[in-house]
Image 1 (tube, rainbow, N blue to C red):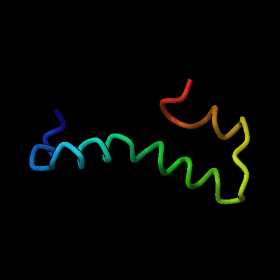
Image 2 (cartoon, rainbow, N blue to C red):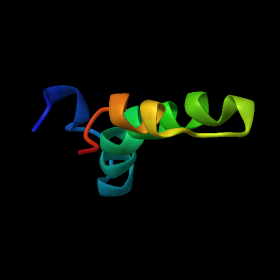
Image 3 (spheres, rainbow, N blue to C red):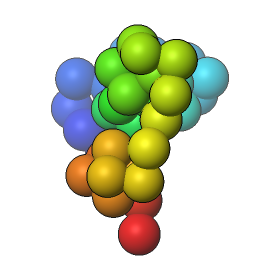
Length: 46
């Protein structure tokens, strides 16, 4: 486990693991359209 996460609850840890993709979705959707190029560049999406 990531040492900085040791004091967090399980729900908080799950949210921190999801944070990078959530940020990518927010940025990609800023123009109200998420295109394939943005999806392919997002982390953890194959």
